[in-house]
Image (cartoon, rainbow, N blue to C red; front, side, top):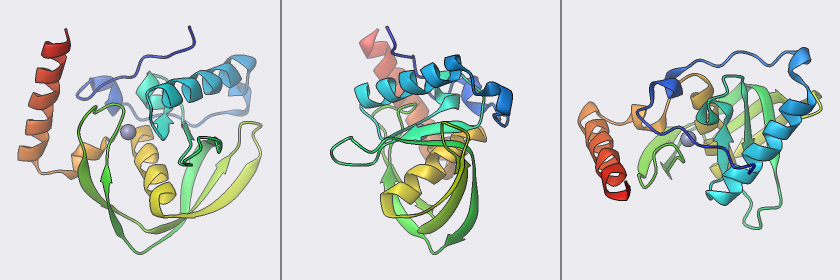
Length: 169
Ligand code: ZN
């Protein structure tokens, strides 16, 4: 029973700004939560999951953008220290199921973060990995990708999700 439940748009808890992970947060329970988040993400299936989405309001996220699902990545207290260019990618989100929309983001980024042992690393990313990092970092600031859409389109998304939920209830 490791699977965590994922908050869905427009749940107001998705609007929470997460706080920095402190050295004291690196507990066995935290390591377990990381494992549970990976399990939840792979099972969904998804390529990234931010703590915000499982109602934990600390700045970290898990990710695996590989085809083989064998390249798990953890980013704790991530910050983008360099970004360049732009790209448009059709994004989806486990918190906005069944909805896909084009979002423009930086094409190349350098992210600085801590790994699950608390060790700092810098990673240069482009393409899908760069998209995913920026998407998950938005969650930590209480943002969801549909925020980039027009108000009209966002309202359509909200209605479509409400309808999906009614039909699956
Ligand atoms: Zn998302």
